[in-house]
Each structure stands twice: as C-alpha cells, then as structure tokens.
Image 1: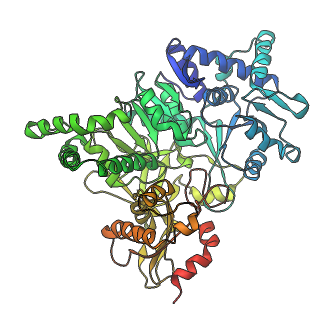
Image 2 (image 1 turned 90 degrees about the vertical axis):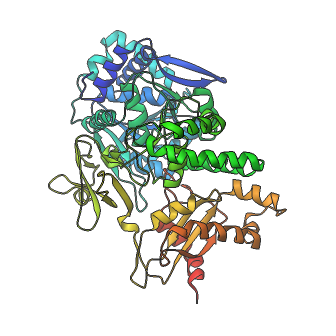
Image 3 (image 1 turned 120 degrees about the horizontal axis):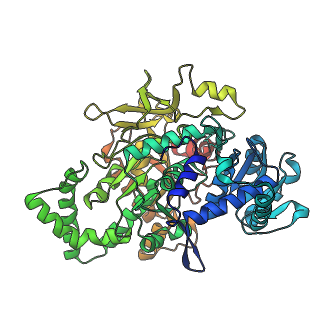
Length: 598
C-alpha cells in the first residue's frame, strides 16, 4: 500500500482486509469482533453524521474517552472529513479539560460516558465555541446539546442517502501537510501546549517504524495505554491498522494481566511500569518457593543471561548452552511466557526510561523488550531498538528519515518529517523548540555509543541537579534504580544547590501492606505505617541497595516516606503519570527543608 495521509491509509487498509477482524472489545464478558469492513461502515456512518452537524475541514472535534472501538471510529471519521481531532485524557479534571477545549477552538466533544459528559457540562455554558457533546454511551438530551452516538450515525444514514456521502471520496480531500490532530502535552510546568501534528508527521513515523520493526497482518495487539497520547496512537492504533493486524482493547489497566492470558498478543506496547510490576511479582513468588525451586529458578536466570548475549543480537545459542537453555525454558521460562499469553514476539517500551536490570531479566527468558525514544512533538518515535539488535540502557538508533545530533551542551536534537509544525497559537514556544534549520530541541540530554551508534538518554536538561559542592547529578538514573524496588511506587531525587542528595518516596502500598501484615504491623493508617521503625529500616535497605551503582556524591543520603500518591488531581503528576517536579518541590517544601535542617 502507498498512502500519504491517515485518510488514505484507512481507505486502503479496509479495502484490503474487508473480512479480517480489526478490533475486539469485551461486551457482557465476551470478546466481540468487528471486521475491517464493519469498521468501514461505522466510520462512514459516523463521519456522515458529523458532517450533518456542519463539521468539515479544519474544524476541531475532541475525543474524551478511554480506549475502545468508538474511539477508533471517531478518530478515523474526523480525519476522513478533513477535520482535526483533539485528544483529551479522560483522567483530567474539568478545569484542565476546559483549557484544552477553549484553547483548541473545539466545536464538539465526543465523550465516553456520563462521568465524562458531566465534566464537559460543568463548563459548556462558559465555552462559546463549544456547540455540543456526542455521548458514546448514547445519552441523548438535545435540549442540553447532548447527542447520542447512535443518533449521530442515524443522522449519517440520512445524510448518505440525501447527499451521496462517501468516506472514501471525502478522504481524498486531505493533503499530507494538513493538520490531523492536536495533542496537548501534559507538561511538568504551566499550561499544556497543543502539539500540531499533520498527516505527513504521523505517516512518516508509521512507515519508518515498520521498516525498523516487522509488523504484519498476523499480529495481535492488546491496547491499554491511552490513545489520547501519541505513543499508543501511532504504534498500536495506526501502525497496527495499516498492517492489517488485529487489536483487542483491554478492559482496563487493572485487567491487563488477565487480558494478556485471554488475548495472547504477539505484540504489546507498554510503559516500563508494567514490566517492573511483572518482574516484581515473579521475584516475590520465587522468594516464597521451596529452596530447591529457588535454586532451579536462579540457575535458569544464569543460563538465560548467557543465552541473552545471542538473543539480543538476533541469534540463537548453540551447543551445550542451547541444551541448557532448552531445559531452563521448560522448567522456568515457559511459565513466564504463558503469563504474557504464550505467543508474544516482543514488547515495545516507551514513555519513560526502562531499567536495564528489568530488560535483561526478560531477555534471559527470550522475551524481547524493544525500547524506543521520542516525544509528542516528534510523532513520537525518534529512535528504537531492533529485533536483530537490542541493547538495554539505550533507546536504539534513529529510524529511517530522522536525523539526530547532540548539541554542544549535550542536548539531543532531532530533524525530519516526524517533527511537529509547531504549538497551536503559541509562536513563541514554537520558536524556542524548533530553530531556523528545522532542528527540534528535545530538552533531553544524551550521547551516542561509539560501538553501534545507539543513543543513551542520561536525563532531562532542566532536571539536572548541581549540588552546593559543584557536582552535576542526573536524577533520572537514580529514580529508575529506586522505583525498580517493588516497595517504591514514585520518587523524586532532590539536591539542587544542596550539600547532599535526598529523596521523597511514595511507597507501593500494595507490597508494603503485604510485608507489614506478615510482620504483624498494622496497615490501617498510612501515616503511622510509614513512621514505623521497621518500615523505615526496610526502605533504608532498599535505598542502599539501589544506590550501590552510583558514586558517593550521587547517592541518596536521606529520604522521607510520603503517605499519599502524586496524582493528576493533586497537580503533582501528568496524565502520563510523570512527576511534576516543580509542583512536588513546592508542595513538600517544609518536608524537604526538614531533611536538610542542621
């Protein structure tokens, strides 16, 4: 297939795969399929319904929903009209949603359910450009400008009959340089910025990504990362559909483990936290096994580590090592593979740095995790590891058509068709991010490995700490090491203009409560729990272990446990659950000062 726009990609893919399952969604505890032909019909009807409302080229339509079939249908329908999709995380609070709706000039919002509709209703009267809500759950109240999804499709049926509307004819009107979508960066400071991505931006990333990693019509995706973000949208949503693959929508974040066993995906896109949790659960189970089973497990890991030297380079071990790995696989690794479905080809990791230790653990079982790197502004992929060569601690090499260089101060710069055209209604921010020669300034610090030209990310430029002793400290590697502990859910390393490094730590209360119960310690009150001497001793040991790989001046000398998670609602986390450093530092200033007192 040759296509230059998302609309063309959609038309060609549905024409080539009419009878093949495109999506599965769980309804009444049963996975229900939709073929590519079914999706084509739904998209045409819904696009026609939107057109009947007067929505056309360049109009902004927001999608405010968790992952589901109607999210995909909405996206392709909006693109097919030449309109612009505005993606909204359903986890956002009304004030945050209102800013995005107003700033983007959105005319209609497609909402998932009554809860999401209620958020929009709370401010719709104060958003003059917002004409109405289209409810996926079919809530219908025209007096309040709420229209059911099925009602819009019924209006579309009439529009098709009266106007002779065709989604394929309409799709031809889109041009590669037309704006496809506005995605608001979560940002760790200030209001989010609307990243303007064109059809060409996304198409370039799809096509280059498929050259780097093989994806075909036999592949099965399990989708659970938010489609509101470009990572899942490009890698799973668009790339999978353009390849004729099949996508299952997970029931929710909490059911991903169960859904993996049911769906048995061949490819799965996730963030490092999923792999860390799987790793922690496996090790926790092993620690409770009889001594002989523990011995077999660690023998298998040792064997797998030697075999991984071949697997990570696209090769197979031979001789006695191959024989030993076959035994290790049968006794240990086959069980882990069954937990992730039994036919997984590889995981794709992005959105945050992956712990090398976790990556090596999966590689030992011959379960590849291909880590990549990019930003919303780059559609998103800049670099990625390959099946034939993946190296933990790196994010791979640039994909086709993308140039990468390191500035004099260590900042990673990127240039290519994947780079956004700018921030919506924010020329000043655009000029700060993209220079006259088209180089995008990522804000990340990194370096290329001499051996293979693979890129290493060392930290965010603005996150670097300079101690009062003049030492430069990158907090990200330390935070990765700390959160590798199953007992640590979130952390923030501190030390800028201070005389030593400290950390704020939010425990993983799931694991801490289990440990405390075994120790006979009450878990009823979190504030009391985190002050318990035995708990502090536990975390002191975890922090000490995590700091072993760092220089003395980098190591965390003091830490404070916190009883509350950093959330979107508290303003301390982004929708991607990245920590908003500035806000946390402000909110916990007294706690931090106490650590440095005296």
